[in-house]
Amino acid sequence: MEGRASDSPYIDMIWRGQAGKDYAVICPAASRWHLLFHKQDGRVKVSAEGPITRARPTTQPEGAEFLVIEFKLGIFLPKLPVDGLVDTETVLPLSSKASFWLHGSTWQLPDYDNAEIFVARLVRQGLMECDPVVSAALQEQPQELSERTVRRRFQRATGLTPTTIQQIERAQYAMTLLGQGHSLLDATYQAGYADQPHMTRSLKHYIGYTPAQIASNGKVE
Image (tube, rainbow, N blue to C red):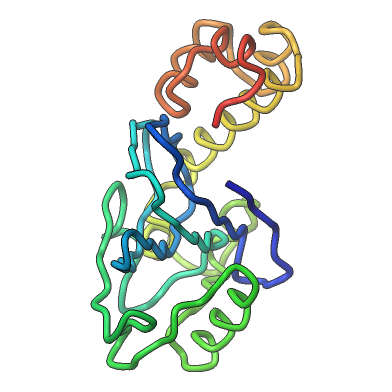
């Protein structure tokens, strides 16, 4: 498994990997949706997968290859709103082993190196948009919209509420601190939890491990 950041204003991270023998992991909660390109024994699957609101186990058959394009908060496909993808996926139909259908057009499968080009084409064709309401809401900036409109647009573009996103990202930050060797007390304070039991509940829900397990392992895959 390897990943890289992107200079695209639409992409948060790009990941690729190949499953080894007995691949079984706990997949942590994630606040961002992504496109998944999966290959196994000559078969291809393309899916749009939404945010994950709690940790869950996942397995992959040996040899499975995957490419993940993870999008920044506020980036979405207008014809496939993120609020309909939370904790689930939508499989996109294939047109060949090297292409798939999206909104009436065929698209070549991207790879690890040209993901930005692929996404830029989606943007030029008007299939992908950025809603500025999301970034403004996350930064608690005043907006000339009703609270109801902001909430509706935020959930359409992200699938989640600002509070849920903050909870997921706080758990991820606490996991990073513990993985770096910070004490449980220090991680509790720096991540902004009320106390250690609060952090324990949060990490078990969103990450799938207790703080002690994360600290002893050094990191969570």
